[in-house]
Image 1 (cartoon, rainbow, N blue to C red):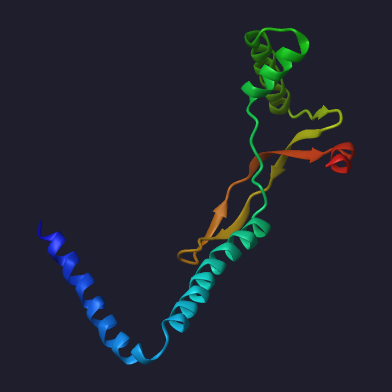
Image 2: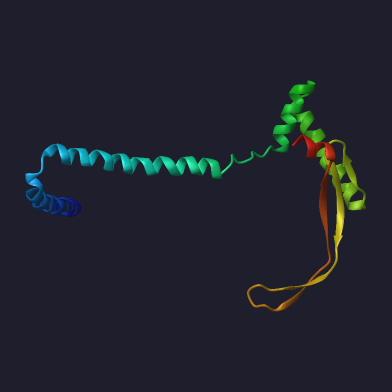
Length: 154
């Protein structure tokens, strides 16, 4: 109940200010004050529309991520398989690719690109917080090199 009287007091103060300003502008016709209020409302609405247009241009539509499950469901429909069978095929494919990469072999997906393991040598780096030199261990990373056909089609 304490909040409602505060709100009434806050609305009462601007009303008192308006009363003093309307006394000064009482000599002016009411049409001018009404006309002056309309452009102000239009100006207030115009800036809201402008940022939306610039935001749409600046931020392109984010790319959607397709999951393995969605892809397997599409493949099941296209080839007359059950979803479970197509999911098993995709999981088996992922397992076999992983085994080949662990052996150090390259894996080529015609029309898409090549997966391979690249060795990164040990090197010296810096801790950005302290500036201290640190040694970064050697590691292996999986790299994907995009095929020419995919580059040209996208």
